[in-house]
Amino acid sequence: MLLAIDVGNTQVALGMFDHDKLVGHWRLSTNAEATFDEARWQLVGILGADGFTQSDIRGVAIASVVPAVTAALRRVAPHLTSGPVIVVEPGVRTGMSIEIDNPREVGADRIVNALAARERYGAPVVVVDFGTSTNFDVVGVEGAYIGGAIAPGLEISTEALISGTAALRKVEFTPPRSVIGRGTVEAIQSGGLYGHAGLVDGIVERIAAEFDEPITRVATGGLAPTIVPHCSSVDTVDPYLTLEGLRIIYERNQDAE
Image 1 (cartoon, rainbow, N blue to C red):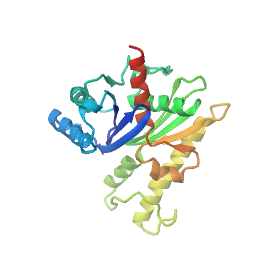
Image 2: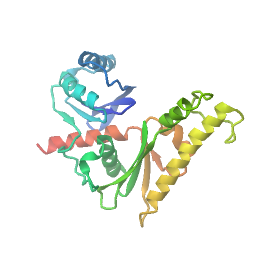
Image 3: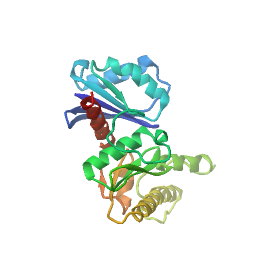
């Protein structure tokens, strides 16, 4: 089996694949200060609790946007498998051309998402990844990664509002009774949730307008189930898109050897 690890700024997503079938998945908080021992025992414990051992795991694929965690996982991964460890970075085979000004500056998660979306849904396609930031990544008609947009995520936007305003407090991201909030909590919920949905619709429609043919719109990320129901521009929610992209990249790098 293959262990896929997607490290974001806020959360780490883990997926266990038996060939192309996802047979286990977990989420945990990102801890950039975890020691080698802490990271190792946390992962061993999570996997072991569901019956997975080192002998079950034939390889590990990693995409990370947190350098400290990337470094830790390079050390931890060999203790999780006796097979190859692939870290998505420049030089790793993806099978997708990166047609932007500086290909080395694009995040690993964005490439992984774009590749998985192209393989699953065809091209052109735009992926909206709802995480700490809300990322928009675009695969063009010819199947190359051609760029995208980055916006502050819902949680970080709301935290900035609250931290900069003495009288406001944290709220749960649930739909208020109406768009017109009848109190401060509902007003923050309305502005945050519907405001972010409007941001997504606006950017996706502007991206779509740059194409002469229909473009598929796919959403992923931890906050997708919260925000997408209030969007009009997204076709599909694919919660495990990044993990699937890691699986594809791992297999391509094994085939290339």
